[in-house]
Length: 287
Image (cartoon, rainbow, N blue to C red; front, side):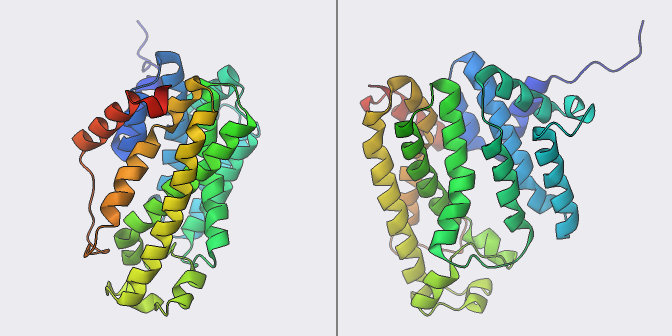
């Protein structure tokens, strides 16, 4: 009898990784058919691995090396070790089975190099470019798994990702400020007289509130556009955009008057599942 360890259950590994580190996207996959769900979990597990690099290194260089491994793997320059990595193995399978384009996956990894440094986000345009290459790309790739690509789906994915990403910037302010890293655009902060050091110190000021209000308005605009575009895409593609229901709920919660922007307000897993379940049964996401 061989004493060699059995091969890892790559599907279960990806599912556990996403469930542990990105529960909203994990929960959204529960409403997808089994074959598509496996590919979605591979996509989201890849994203988790990329996003987690920021927390796994203390200096930028080791982080860049980790991100470079993924871009090399996607370009076919990593041999042997790719198959030994459960996430890489599942991602390569999803790319093959659903003919996913490699370029946006590589760009997603490249864009997250920004996370490794404490450089401020310069402008709203720069933030939207970052979010388009990350959040919007994930929506577009997820949609490609459940339905044929189209210009309408790509347009929807862009606005969906911008809405989701801006909401995440607002929600992640307590964590980012504690790390002395800001995704709030400097341009927007300067226009309201908001000082970076005051944000790092956790000071809630009228200027910061004005910055967050402006970002919330931008998120609301993109969300409204995305929801209006849902009716223009084929019904099979709409489940990929179920997370928009969470974006809508989060934006409402984060926009409440008097909310302390430095107090984390995580949503319970039960609430996340309930929101997604209701959306999955609504005409908005099915008809």
